[in-house]
Length: 337
Image (cartoon, rainbow, N blue to C red; front, side, top):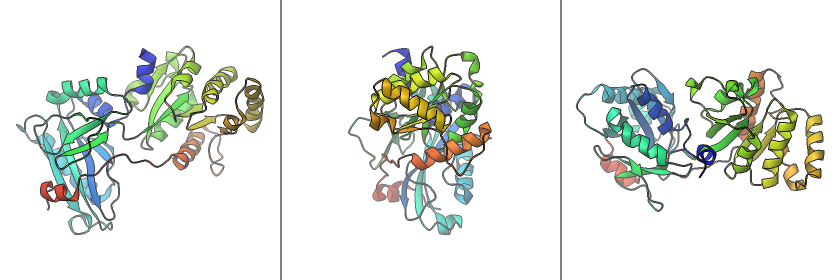
């Protein structure tokens, strides 16, 4: 596998593991919180995650009193000395009686503490991971996190889920002002973000860690080698480059969504040329241009980004390939309060 293939098929820096490793690189221990089982009405589903540090959070498990309670539990874990490696807690919360929330269901959450002692093994898991890698999370302390076998499912003492949370690969071509506005609005919408450009100087500062930067002399090569069913947004500085990227994607036909920034006139011109290049009519019909929803019609980068984010949120297929822990195991292992 080439460096390019590894980069565009590997672990996203926006995945939970990528985020935890970023915190650890800066000397900040973190607790991963995962919903591992639900019953009745709950604010989020099985597999929803958040990360808690001493002074920050990433993502959400639903907000409200539940989230504040879990944040307090996680920070107590961070403050506790001498807990040893792979410190964990499995807790159960009944949202009405325990939390005073209007949701009437209950849920079980796995809290996993990661610090310097776990960093080396987590890095190894990240290096070996690709977009389909699943991890087996023990629900008791002291047992290392590990890669799950292909047939392994969640069981009484183990929660199995993909690293990338089933995120859809989203390739944004061109790191200009619109793309820079689009990237932060895609966070939390279930996309594994890749920002592609021909010049390193065009990329935004790396501290956001929201997208994997792909420097490519020929971005159409990235498009041709992107994973099946990926989403593509084409918004470079050059119409000829836009056309080359669209040709690479449309010639494959196995993409999930292809959006091209521009007007209806631009679309008509591109369709004519792409048809002459041999692109099948049924693939050309899927070229979305202009992009965004008509209800948001502003032309500033922020308004375009909001419109595109809404369009992709509506488009995105529902998917859930996580198996909850069994009710029996939750009853045995989950603490009540």
